[in-house]
Length: 414
Image (tube, rainbow, N blue to C red):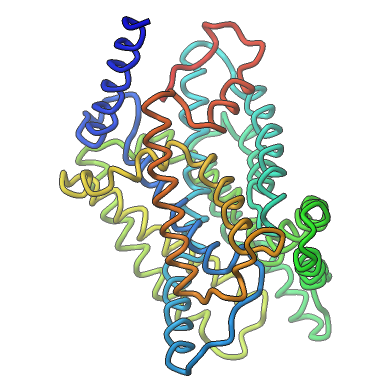
């Protein structure tokens, strides 16, 4: 017993050392740590956005003074400008990157990852339902599970073809079709998907304080509301475009640390910055048709995302930045666990079936609560990864993905 205890203690000590050293490991290591850290950054931003908006539960206090009301609103506007529509975009980009790595690893062993990936997306849909129980109309994982299937028929296409397809989706062809229809017939309007009505019904269910009623509405009305909003907001086209772009970045090894990639990310950051400014100016023009406004909003978000990603990758070349962002590594390695658990934590804090603090928390207070919850998640991630190879849900996803496969077919931990 003593020997086993000492052995376990030694293993945990080694894991702590590895986690502490990760930012300093060679870029030739099996894991690409800048991707883990970038994914952690994206999930953290998503979580704080969700806390600010009370997980799409529109219940806020009446400000005690005009000064406090202005402070809350200005903080919310600034945070949303920096991260809303951008953190999700980073997450989607890295989704495609992960597929590229998984597909390549299996191809090197003479296997096609397509079938396992389809099954993996079915499992992701199950996790999406878990998340949706606590997040009325806000789940994005189901969108990922559906749109991610596009990667399967595209997996063997040439890189140039993938880039063209990515640009096609990112160009928002559906919105341009809507705009053309309105130009031909000014009285025409896109088909209504009843998004506002769905969200109103979800709020009514949450207001009852009945957990089971809320869960049922979230799983049914909520999942439809999330998909319908994604269609109206342009994410139906944006998501597969980002997946394909991430696939290209992974296939071309653009996240490895070398001089060629440094030049690529430097140019990418400058072009993205110019595009973000230009598209922001256009989307701010008055009397812009709604579909055209959606197009330029999506383009602005993608370009702004390019600034975030390129800047992060370039800064990660600096030892000081790698040390500062150590918590992002473990947080990113458990991104699925953190994404789903933040919905659970948020609902327990804000919704009437539990603490019901939403009517008492403005944007600043909600942000502070989100930071505290995030700190707890970071501590848990570090504790868990000192003892386990995968995160909680990541381990379940990995084992279920490779269920029935021989030991030789299973990939090593990345």
